[in-house]
Structures are given as structure tokens and as C-alpha cells.
Length: 104
Image 1 (cartoon, one colour):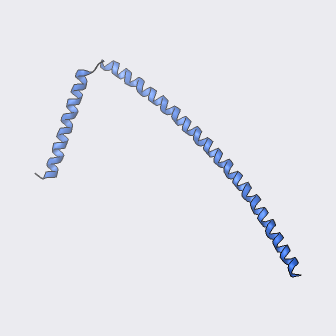
Image 2: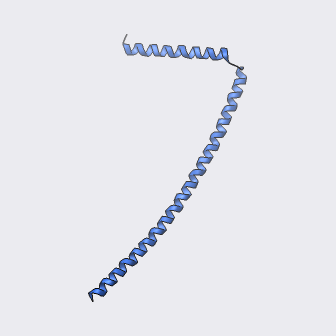
Image 3: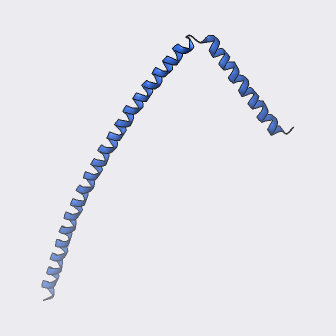
């Protein structure tokens, strides 16, 4: 038999044996009955679900807030850029007029 196939078989067998041993140990050493454990797990999953929902709401709210801030910042930058462009145009026009005065 090929070494790689033998390695896969040994690994698979070890996994299955470990899985069975762990399951048996869990059943023998379980501190509560199955129904009690299922109730605990159900409560745990509900708690996790509620927590995940709250986190999703907070992330959505934070994203909306960040989007609003970026939009406002972009508008502010646009307004500032327009003012700078207008001032630059005015300065260029003044230089042109000054140059015309010098050439007369």
C-alpha cells in the first residue's frame, strides 16, 4: 500500500477513535441530563443571537454615522475648493490686468 494512502487511513482511523472516545467520555461525565443540557444550550444560543443582533445594529448605526460625517466633510472640502479656485481666478485676473498696465 502506498505511504500517502496508509497515512490517510491511519489519520482517519485515529480521528474516528478520538471522536468516539470523546463522545463516550462526555456522556459518562456529563454533569446534567440531556434535556437540561439542551435547555442550557438553547438559552446560550438565544443569548448569543440577541448579542449578535445588538452588535449588528451598533455596526449599522456606526456606519451610517461615519457615512454622514464623510458626506459633510466632502461638502466642506468642495466648498473650500470652490472658494480657493475663485480666489485664485481673481488673483490671476489681477496679475493679467497688472501685466496689461505695464505693457501700455
